[in-house]
Image (cartoon, rainbow, N blue to C red; front, side, top):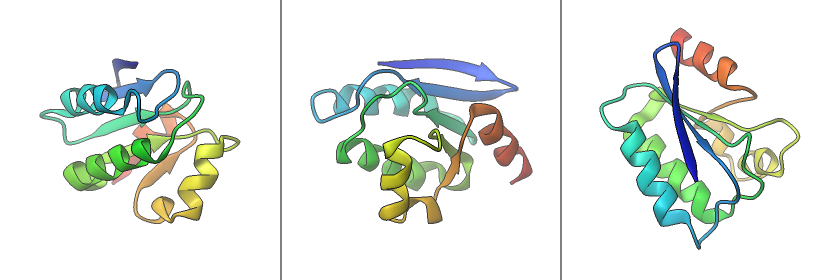
Length: 109
């Protein structure tokens, strides 16, 4: 499930629960709809318990579409944070520890 909100004029989408092949298409569609007509967009995984490679593919597609306007929130202790580092996503995508940090990084860009 995806919960969409606005904070300081930036649309934020929180992935709630697990993100895997069984629900990836629905989450992809929700995130794409939430990001429409936005030049800055935050995706939060703070409430996501598990994310497989289909979730990473969604992030890569969003990054391709939004470029530097995308920020992804992943808690430092989350397994997903380590995976993003291992595959090098953290070198090409803005990864933050909180929504507030993500919005500040987008504002500074």
